[in-house]
Picture 1 (cartoon, rainbow, N blue to C red):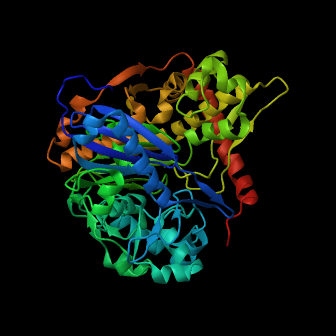
Picture 2: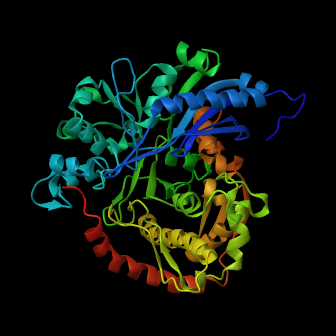
Picture 3: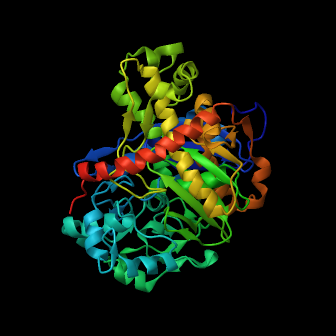
Length: 536
C-alpha cells in the first residue's frame, strides 16, 4: 500500500518473513496495514541421500538488502519502526559455536538424512517404523507428537550432526532453529520459542502457558542438555537490536525485538483465524490446514496434533503436507523453459509471483478431471495424513491425446485432491465438518486454483485479500501484541477477504476423482517403498 502524502506514519513493525524460497520483509502497522514488500531469493542446496541445506549467512545478508530496499521506497515508514518480529520456516537446524557463528549450513526441514540415526537412537522392542512404542507413548503424552520417521526435523538433524560430524558436535554451543538464529543475530540473545523448539521433541507441552523442557525427554534425546536454548513465549520482548545488527540493518539500537514464530504459527495469526476451530489453508512451497483449539490433542493415525503457538492459552492444530506450490515450481523450473510461451503469455514474467496469471489463462480451458490425467503431488515424500518419505509424484493415465495444459491442470487438481485427503482427517480431529475456510499463502493468488479447491473440497473458500503477506502480517501482529499495541482479540476485525469461492457443478466430478486418488495411494505406496528404500 502506498503512503498517503502528509499523513503521519503510525509506529511500524519490521516483519521478517524467511521462507524456503528466500528472505522477505514488510512494514506492518498495528492495524495490519502492510506498507512495502521486498524479497531476495536464497538457494536451497539439495544433496545426495536426501539432504537439503541453506546458508544462514546468506539469509542475514539478504535481510540487510530487503531492509535497504524498504528504506529507499518508504523512508518515513522505516524511520517509524519501533519493533522487529520474525516469521520463519520451521524445523531447520543450525549448530552454532560459542560466538553464535554457524558451524554448518542450516539443515532444512526437507532434509531426511537423519532418519537412520533416529531409528538407532530411539529403537527398541516393540517398535513401529523402527521407533520404540514405549518412547512414542511418552512423546505423545508429554509433547503431543513425535519425531518424524522421515528424519525431517531437528530431533533427527541433531543426531545426524552428532554421529556424522563429531567435530562439529563438539564445537556446538547450541542447536538453534531458523527463527532462533535470526533472533540471535538481531539481539545477541540465545532463545527458542514455544513453537520453534517443538520438533526437537524434548518439551512438556501439557500446560499451554507453561511450556518447559522435560528432563526425561532431554536425557533420552542423545543430545547434551546444555546444547538446548532457553524457551520464551512468541510475544516476549527478548531485547533490543544488538549494535552489529543495528549497523547491519541501518536501524536504531532502541528498536525492540519480539521473539516471533515459525511460519504456520504466524500464518494462523495473519489469516485472522483466532477463534477456536476456525481453519485456514496455507498454500506455499508446502501446505497445511491449521486452526486454534483449546486443548492438547493428537491423532496418531494421521499425524495431526495440536501444538504450542503464539496465543498463550491455546494450541494450534496443524496438519502439514510436504509439497504444494513446490509442484508448480518444479513444473516451471524443470518442465517449462525460460523462453516458453507459457511463461510469456500475457506478458507474464518468469517470476514465481506472476506466473499464476499465465496459469489462470490456461486452466479454465481444460475441463475438470484434466481429460483423465491424475497427478500425485508427493515430490518429497509426505507428512500427513500419512508420514511416508518414500512416496513420489506421478502423472497417470497419459495418452497420445494428452496436452501440456492437461498436465498443468492435473497438477493443480492433484494438490487439491491431496488436501481433501488431509481435510477429511481435519474434520475428524475437530469433531465437526469444516464448511468454510480461509485460503492464504502465495499460491492462493491463482483464481483457478482457489476455485478448484472449493470444488474438490466441497467447502466455501474465503481468500485472504493479501495472501502473499500473510506470514509477514502475522509476524507484524505478534510483534504488535508483544509490544502492547493490540491484543489478539482485536485481530479478526482487522482482517479482509477479497473473494469467496463456492463449490460448483464440478464437485461431483471430483468426488469420483478422489475415490480413484485414494485407491492410487493404496496401490502405489508399496511400489514406492520398493523403489525408494530408506538408508539403513
